[in-house]
Length: 515
Ligand code: BG6
Image 1: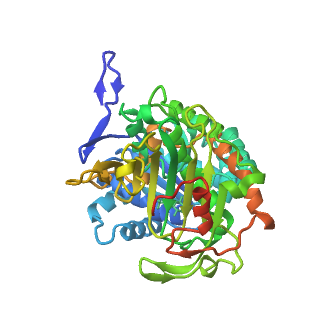
Image 2: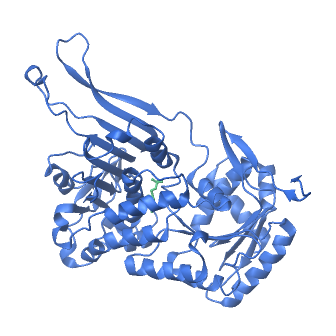
């Protein structure tokens, strides 16, 4: 603190330098963690808070109040959270550091269906706020099953937990934000009745990945790419998020979701928007989110009558991944043996605006594929006249620019170069930029800090959620009918997906990049 001219106390922002990067330490606040004994809290949130503490990025005036149905004392809760952090960082947990975090951890049992639980919660928060001097700033993190969102949100308002009289109240929710347009509108309506949009942080962990944030930097901090970034030079775009993992331990969730809800409505469409958007006038949350919403509004609706030509769905059979035999989706624990839930989709998306007219975006994502890879590939047009044609025997591949999101995060440019020594012979070559260091903040650390800072740039706005659902709901309705279901399983685990996905792009005279 320091005094200004009128002798009032003003806060001087505190910064930490981590791997040559200046990061601001947020001001006083508390984190109210709903679902504190659950999987998300234990696997992601507590380990991220521990790392923030390790990097001295948590404000000194801070506390965490966990709540869940399970009866636990503060002491038992601390023990449980210590186990979770130790499991996330095996063998490396620093006892002294843990003790300092543990001193800020509290617990209250709650029954989310009962309003009196929220009254008790509010009283407990008020008393802890006095102890930790957190200035009334509250983050309400709903790490609870999505079907409990509406009940909890509806109680937060009347309990006086959404007001901002003393400090801010930010609410964080994770996907799935609804399961179709109507349910997303319903949830947004409940949120709107209790919070203002600027208080709502809808998280998409892909947006918090360093390399996804780099898409904006790469496009709008360099002048040489933007003139090429449209229908005159780009033939098509491929966005791939392939995974080697299967459904893991999430059968119940995945059976209700499937790949379109799990990956397309959020992660893949966000990557599409970052690739296709116009330059925002300012690097500000609202300006960036305006441009993304404009992209979504320009996406040509998938015509229910022509779905076969634009969407391919698949489900994995048994196979071999990374040299190990794995079972098919229908044999996974908790999955019905006749499940018709898709674990793979490929989709051709057209954007009806001047920039992208006639440039298809091919999106694909699936589980149990040959490789773990997330990338955005910009495929340029071939040269208009290839004067070397009489001298070379093979067609040459056009230029491509690939933004590699994971693994081997970086950027590659593919071009043709003369093969040395030959008279006329071309070789495709790759120029590579690879990030050397591991990222300094993981996605959950980033979103926790941004939420404390009140920066909504990496969070999804209400309108974007609804437009993306409105684009995908006809497809989901079709999948829900027997006629819309494929004959599954149709791709072997460890392969590059169903053969029909190749046809989708080959029909247009193009090919998928290898996984
Ligand atoms: C989640 C999906 O949102 O993203 C998972 O629910 C998926 O099914 C995961 O495995 C992929 O994220 P990442 O960061 O591992 O690419």
